[in-house]
Image (cartoon, rainbow, N blue to C red):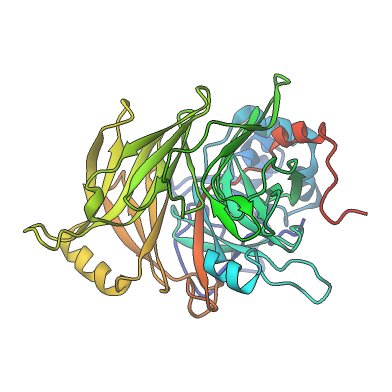
Length: 443
């Protein structure tokens, strides 16, 4: 694993909560550190003699970018990522979540169908994948670049949960899903699905002890036709229970699943239904689908679902052209009755006027992680960050790694994002090893 997994932009000088400074006086031989909060000097000779177990506990609380930079200090720090003792401490302490967003330059479904292109990334001369992701840290307003050379060509990203990123095979038929941890380069494979599909909607939920996947729609009823008919689910947990792609209940009639993504909240998977707009909900324990009416469904544009602190949030632009209501971007929260929506926030009108100009009617997508909501403009290089806790809106600097057109990229490409919480180890994937599945491309 390279120590520069998190590659930042040297041209951007942004504040960090962890700042390392070095003295410019070469004649100084004593290493000292200043505590900026108290102004007191601390003797480096004391800190250098901390017991290794105590030092490991301190390192376990470092944010991932700082942890990977610390691996450059010495051989022992470099080897912590592969130390069972350190990883056990890491799992026991459960450091605070470092809420981030992970974006990929992803081909639209239309591009797949008509061009048979690859979605995860380009291909090297040797046939390996050049897929890369762009990680955005909303706490520090900083971009990083992550590479995925271990993902075979012919797979595209479909979701993220519990520190794992899911990749789905592009070819129509019995789909295969890979789960990878970008920080350590581990890859695990799920068994092929039981029903042939084209581009289904996929939901992923990963906890320290279980993996749940639900796949719905785009059933291949012939080589040239698809219908949204069925869904299937995969479950494995530490208690020894396996359910390998059991057919779930049928989808509601006349549903249209175009986003390809699902959101997991409180034991349920949610996805947008189009024409007209509504929300489809799959209850995992009850094995049933229900349809939830969306708020102001006749006046919504570019609706997106996201999870925020255990609640489902709908974000959409509202355009009532025939009524005396100003155009706006609004956020609603689904209540516990699973039927009622309550408006929780509305973009300030001056900001929406600017947003509408930049967006130009081309649409946008939203992704949420805890108190943060990221709004990504299609065919533009701008993203807007909303902090629910502080009620603040911020235009985000363009990603310096995704090309000059950022979300535009080449023809048919958009910037697709997922909520991502980087973790150093995901022992739950060891449950998949019991299935003894061959990895794609293995000899």
